[in-house]
Length: 156
Image (cartoon, rainbow, N blue to C red):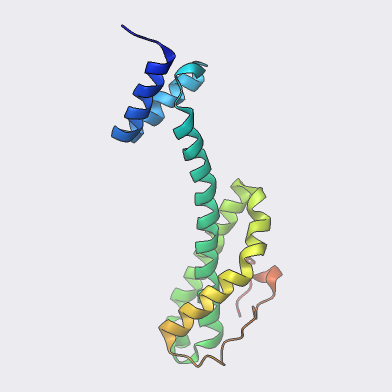
């Protein structure tokens, strides 16, 4: 049996392409056993990088939805009475998910604030598309106090 580290890494790379779950399990075992010569480092680094990017994308996505529903609640008067319970539930859930992400990864806090303007702009466009409200009705700048956006007690 050939157990040369190079052959082992090539086998790991092949495993990565054929059975991702098994590749993860095998990689974890290799790390725990400190069998570092057999680890498929290229794919491991790529996956770790992807995990970080995934959290960043998720926080932006959650923030867009949160701002969308805050805008609907604040400005879509014709639908507010009928939909506000659902909208408030969506607002609460988006806040909860964002806060969980920030709790798990406090380093994402600056990202949250850096992305507010772009996420608000995206949410504004979505609301305009979905509601047919007049463009001049929705403010160009974030109309909500930034410090309250994640505050569970705040509703516009």
